[in-house]
Amino acid sequence: MHSSKSRNARPARGAPAAAVAVRNSLLAALLATEYRRLLPRLEHVTLKRGEIVYRADQKIEHVYFPEEAVIAMVDTTDDGRTIEVGIIGREGIVGINIFLGGVITPDKAIVQLPGGAMRMKAKDFRKEVRFGSPLQRLLLDYTRTFLAVISQSVACSQHHDTEQRLARWLLTMSDYAGAREFLMVQESIAVMLGVRRVSITVAAGKLQAAALIGYRRGRVSVLDKPGLEKESCECYRFIRQQYESLHAELPRLLSGK
Image 1: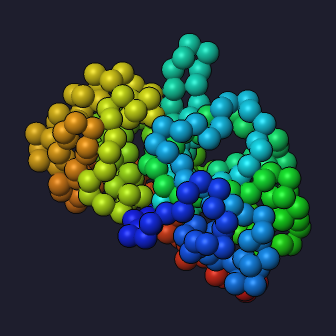
Image 2 (image 1 turned 45 degrees about the vertical axis):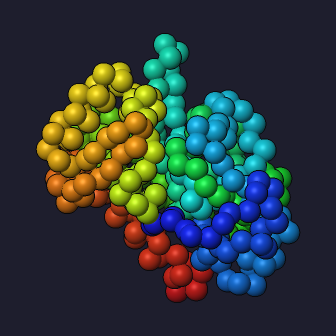
């Protein structure tokens, strides 16, 4: 995960991709000539907090390459319970099912942190991930990484307590926001972690009493990051390491070495 904080003003939804710098790691890893070739098929959009990018069982019309935006993939059971199965930021792509040959998404995709993203029509994306293309080589390795992250997230939901999982979630959001303070209401966190809101209130109260975080009117402050990491489960470090390894690996994937 990498900081997505930017001081530049963002173009409005639907701005030409050529008008913005490349901030998605997958797109940034492409050779300049390859990226320029993709530009006519890319469009810059601004995603709002809480916006639903996909609903479960919806046909995928676009794939998204997040920049500042952070999107959670969420599963919902028949009885209405929810659980986050993966978080996608500037290191990845939303709509990976298209790459895997699918046309329908089984998960709901909800924007957690607002910001920019590049998007491409699904029909254009299918053409660009032909066998041996630079984008296809990048996405093969990204998919392996993302599947490992999903597996770890599922294990985390089963084996770690709410306080550990909350610490992991807050650390992850802080990393993506590129800041120690960000907006996040407890109800939204409860939905992502698949627990009752009161459980989040209790866990956040313990972290706040230990002076690890501050929470006021939906604004979370990470006051002691090393201390919060100690309270978190190992999943935070594992997932971060997976994405850092992927980021370091991207240039080699394109060089063919």
